[in-house]
Length: 275
Ligand code: GLN
Image (cartoon, protein in one colour):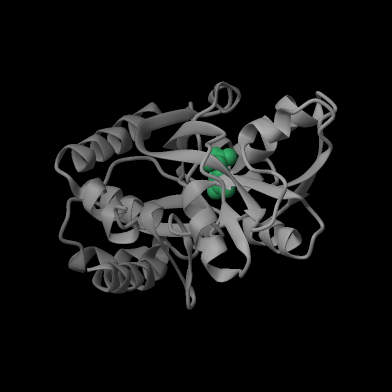
């Protein structure tokens, strides 16, 4: 099932490159494609005509990661399903996590889908779609670590070095809760996997990151474990511009339908086995 999705997605992305790949050459190359376009042409205004451009950071398995040259994962498939409903072709743009909101705000991308947590601060810059998944900030430690629970990070006199992915909620919460309180130093990495490597080599004492990528990273590095206690529970949603209400409403309605008819759950279950 997962393989098939991935294959279809790759195919869709390859096809979409023909129509959506080049932003500099709009009308000319798109015209011949019209005859083979079955769905009614979308009247939605998007970053590139006829395309749904998704901004992401493909370092976040199983939500978005590379399989060969293609970006696959839960978010990529949900975006593909939304695009299909709207008669648009999906284009995925990989960037640093902390560039996604800016790309959406400035209209370079139509939606940020990146296992992105809804926070009041981000809501000042973008509108979030319906929530489609939940995440948990967890703590990764070495198997012999003195840190055994979230409480240990808050203990009087604590002075841990904590690895995080820059500008993620793991970074924001540990900065506010721990660094600002003089209880920790935060070491910020552009990839979660790099923070996990820093833990392995002893540069940091623990990593605070979302639970699903945490599982994927720990599975690949010997001698690490995820603590049972959870730091923060959060909701994932798509980030969209506040200035394109028609697109927001269309995307959100499509997403709501995909949640209601079980498509989103099927996609999530194909990547995350229930334990
Ligand atoms: N959920 C976290 C956040 O929104 C991390 C997302 C990510 O690293 N892709 O900040």
